[in-house]
Length: 242
Image 1 (tube, one colour):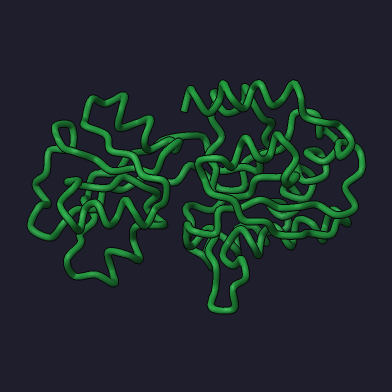
Image 2 (image 1 turned 90 degrees about the horizontal axis):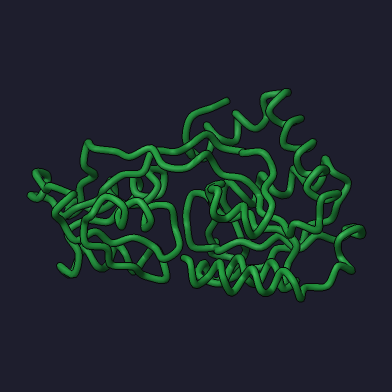
């Protein structure tokens, strides 16, 4: 993550500011590979909690949304370099990320992270295990800090495959992502042990785009105030309501 953030910090200095004050059309950057937050549906379109949330936020802010997908490991650098205007991709607000980009207020509460293991391995000691996590996530940082052996992968699907093929003992990821996988696959089990990491999920923006951040902040707050955000959280099962 440090290499990514160093590269991104350099991009901040060279990025243009033409988009900072004019956002009648806003390009919403997401991964499209992390259900239920965001995924690509059978029609080839971005779908999920953040698609529905993002469209509503843009409507309340009087903006037109265009959706752009980007691989997770370059999602911050490509925001800073101007390939899109926001990140809305299940990104937890952290102090390290906030040094490089700006964030709106959170639109989810901190979501527990779960461990997924092969059935029969429920007694796993995670501190001495090999744990798979997606690169540049709060889960990867947590595993590294707790002293377990970390193996990182570019996509969430690869972390699951690592457990299935014996490359890792467990995967650590958002509980909302792992729960449906465990329910659909009898070979996989979620451990009872969970970790509470990060400060909730927010939209990422360039630090130069304060006006756009304020518009989305106001829209998020209005959805919290009238209960529509809580309704979406319940619908998509992405954590605790506000």
